[in-house]
Length: 142
Image (tube, rainbow, N blue to C red; front, side):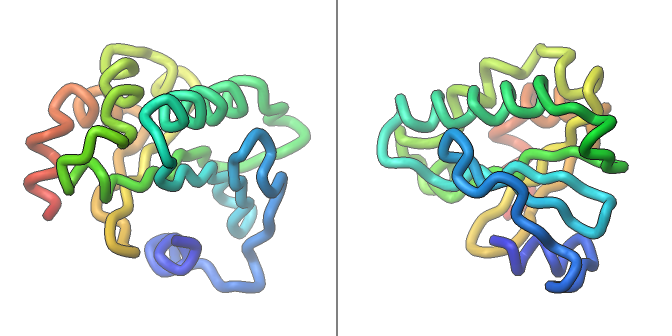
C-alpha cells in the first residue's frame, strides 16, 4: 500500500516516515511534509473494521496540527472486501459517516485502494458525495 501511495502522491521512499507505527492498531505515515495519512487495512471481523475506523477518526480529531503540520490529512482505506461483496469490510463505518461534516471541517481526504492501487481520491469537500454514492462510485472506479 505504501508503494501505491508513493506512486499516487509522487513521493520518494526517502520522504516517507512512520509516525506512530501501530498506534491503536493504526499505521500512520508522514509523506514529504505534505500529507499525514492513516492507513486502514482489512481486518478479521466486522467489529474490528468498525473499531479500527473509529480509532482512525479519533486520531485525526485529536491530532495537534501545530506540532504535526501537513498540507493534507487523509484516510487510505482498503476497499477490496467491499468490492468482493464481503460482509467484513469498511462499508458500515463508511456509510455511518456519509452525512458527517467531519471530513470537510477537518480537511480530511479519503483515498480508496484496491489490489495495490489508489482507485479513488476524494478531497475533503467531496467525501460526503463519495460516501453517499459509495456503491456507484466504487463500481465506476473498477
